[in-house]
Image (cartoon, rainbow, N blue to C red; front, side, top):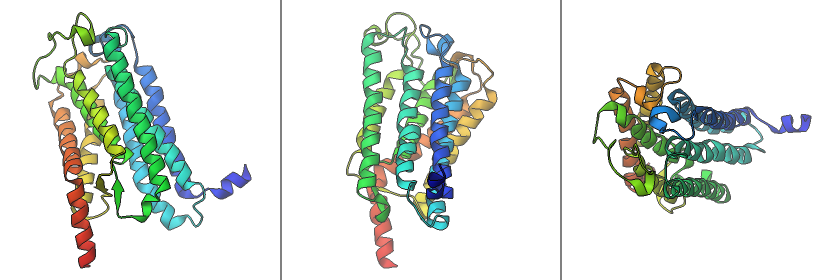
Length: 294
């Protein structure tokens, strides 16, 4: 035990905390399931646990931001940091977001097998791509280059949380189309229907594909990219905190009121994520030109 402690630096404790936060997110999602056979919006999923799970993932992302600089500044020996970071990121930004989506939109007892199996496959795809992305990053020693290859796992988690939050709040907000009476029996079975649930499938597939792509993405360490990242993170963090402030204990999604502002914050987060994804390679080129000029 003493040998293990000697190998650890301050940043390693932060990294372990990040992994524990991701694990807490998973525990909260298990507690969120009230009735496996009920409509998740009306009686199936307790919304306060969902917000708590999202907050744990976001706090883990915040820790992931600060553990690198702390390691470089205060840790003389970085023996365990790389391996711990990979394992922590896999839990917090791959497994936890995938389970979040499956708990929120799986409709286990209500949906047809087609929907549940399709969503499970998409969630497994997200986890597998996240694992491959993290392994590739470690193999390529990604810290030595000025950009990422592919979407980072924390950015993927931010994208998934932003979309999931918007879908979850859409029925109670009154914003957007009323799809509560739409008929999609082949996917969701008979009875109450999915609102915008079906949009989460392509998001999972695209997010996973982006993580293992060769697309050059900025590390968001300075200038405009850093400000963009800060605003996006603040928007999604305050969206979750604001949602927690008006969600009462044991509330379901259909019980929520006054969700328009939270929807706006989730929308800002999603728009900024899309800007980052679409213009990522151009941001990298701009940063490289600036470095050459300097």
